[in-house]
Every structure is written in C-alpha cells, then in structure tokens.
Length: 388
Picture 1 (spheres, rainbow, N blue to C red):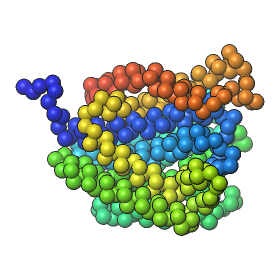
Picture 2 (cartoon, one colour):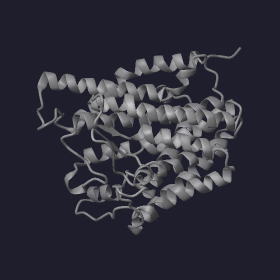
Picture 3 (cartoon, helix red, strand yellow):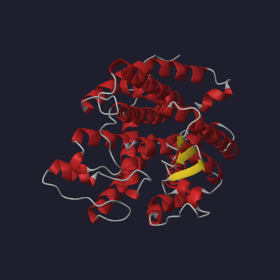
Picture 4 (spheres, one colour):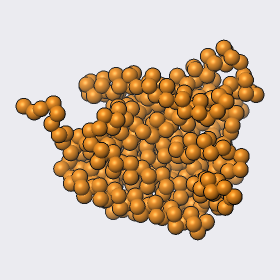
C-alpha cells in the first residue's frame, strides 16, 4: 500500500505537464475568443498596427499566438505517446487519419455553425481545427519515415516555407485551390452561394506536427526526466536565440520592426509577427516559449495549479466546442438585452472587461470540462470519446 501523499511517478508528472500546457493555451484561446466576440469593434490586423493598437489589446492578442503552435506541437507529441501505448506506427497512422478526417468534418459543420449560426452557411472559415485535422492526416503518412528524416522534413518546412511567400496562383490556375490550402491565405469559390476562407494555410503546421511527433522519444516510458528537461531547455534556448538573431537582422519572412519614441511600442514592434501563415519567426518565438513552459510545468510536479490546468487540457475538443457555443449564446443574449452599443456590434468598453469575462467563463466551464474528462478516462470502452 502507498500513502496518499506519496511522491508521484515521473510518468505521471511527464504526462500531466503536457495536459497542463495544453490547458494553459486553451485559456489563452478563451481570452482571444472573448476578444473576438465582445471587442470586435477594435479590430486587429496581422501583424498588428502598433500606432493604433493599445498595449493591453496588443499583448492580449500576442498571448493568443501561443495557442495554435503549442497545440499542434503537442498533437504530434501525443500521437507518438498514443503509439507507445498501442501497437506502434500502424495504429498511430490509422488513428491520425480517422481523427484528422473527424476534425475536418467538425470544422465544416459544428465549429463553423458556432461562429456563424448560419445554416446552410454562405461562408466556411477553415481555421485551426481544420489545420490540425489536415496536419494529422499528413502525419499519418509521415510517421513511417525514420525519425531523422522526419526531423529534417519538419525543419525544412518550418524554416524554409517563407521562401514561398512570393509564389501566388490566380483563380484561373489549376494550382490555385491547392496553394490556397497549403500556403496562400485566400478565398475559394465553391458555388454561387458558398465560399471557403483558408484562414489557416496548412503547410507550416504540417512541419510543426512532424517536429512534435519527433519529440516523442524524449517522453518515453522510463526516460530520464533530468535529461529530458535539459533537452527542452537547450532546444528552447536555440529556438529563441534564432528568433532574436533573425528579428534584429529585420529580414526573412517577416514585416520589419521599427523604433518608436516609446520603449514599450518598440518592444511591441519587435514582437509583432505574422500568424497567417505563421512565419519562421512566429514559430521560433511561440514554440520556444512553449518548450520552456513544458519544462517548467514538469519541474513544478504536482502543484495544485498544475492539476487545475491539466483538467482543462485533458478534454480539449470538448472545451473548444463548449466555449464556442457558450460565447455565441452569451453574445446573442447581450444583443437582445442591450442592443448594439458599439456601432454594428455589442461590445465591452475596455480590454480589462475582456479579461474579466474570460476569467469568469474559465471558472464556469471548469466543472463541465472536468466531468467530461473523468468520463473520458473512465469509459475507455466508448470508442468515440477518444476523438474528443
């Protein structure tokens, strides 16, 4: 028998740190989606306009930059861990292919309806769930590569895709649709009554998910925690130093930064990087920070706040779908009660109200997400639960 206060196994800490990091970025995503729902009268571009974007709004949006890169990286890592528990690459490839198709279907239906409340839709936005789904389908093929080749391919995509920024194919080209999906954000005309917006071109995300899968052996059962943490620290440091070096050179795949009279605005300019599609600098900064957080969360062990974050990250798709519908319904209720007080929108007067709303929603969503995560862990005999 063991004491209830016994030191948890390294495996428990290893896996909980992944869920905790996923939970943290889900909270940043919640904050950004509250902004998109109740602060839409203050639009932000990509990259943002420093002269007209208040610091609170800028840094709130910048925090959300962590979400997609970290989540896609952890998706790749989790796929490797899935294979460790099952029958190797064959099971991984089959799961990735089916899960990827499931996510693509969700984006076209349940997710898009949550944003638009329009049926049938006139516009379908191919966003992060679509990008993760397509990346998983691609990874289903890439898992058969040797690890060295997978790392090389992931690095070539992440580092080199900005060389393709000048490549464009017009609507009359046979490559227009494929290129819009892979790298060139744009509109696709499906019919007279429907258009697709490729908000998240998928090529860079395929590179990120491949690198996440390649991280898997560092997290294998019985792996040395101290060695893993040294590797995470070294990789994060190299990634962040690459960001600093390239940013100071003011070139390659990114809008240049400028000096401002205010030191704060100059810092904002340095951090003002491109997400759609994610530039090399965007991925260096966000993945570097993500790896540092992953190391820190593992070293924090079984702290209660780590456990709370892990709950939010244990059922990410359930959290994602639930928060979208809660936000949409909350917005419609506010419009019905108070009208459109910000031009054509209902909205908060300050970014502080966005943070407060996000905090209250996080508290409200915690219990249903925890209940679903426990159901998912308890009922492994229900096959479809693993897709959420």
